[in-house]
Length: 160
Image 1 (cartoon, rainbow, N blue to C red):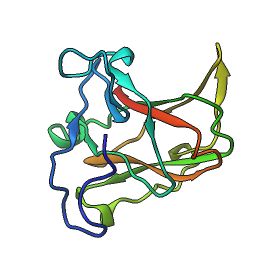
Image 2: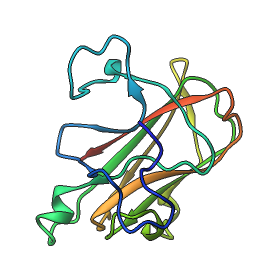
Image 3: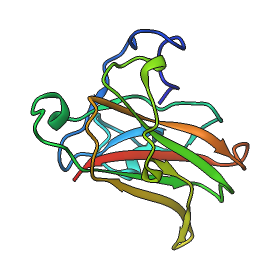
């Protein structure tokens, strides 16, 4: 996926945010795998790792609970898979009610900043669940990434 679309500070992005629905993950970072034969990308094998740089934001997503059912506060989960040891990281989960680069903020609870990576079965994985995501739109922002030159990542969001 490309970096967050649109010019910095733009009012809105030129593409629509991806809708996250229950049971269907949306990849925020990652590129179509060479073996992909159909869209949409429906599993991890369909998504290849993407080189990500510090300061890069993912594509945006939107949740049906925040857009169509304002009284429902959705629970969402983020999983980030690295192709190698990323070293020290800081990836912010940002939210906004306006889909524009200049409107996204990182809420103050520490749960909205991913800083820990676990080594699981030879893979470096970061995982976080957010129980109070109330904004219309969200994205990931890579704030710091110690080994950015050698590590690629793919990230997905799912509605719990």
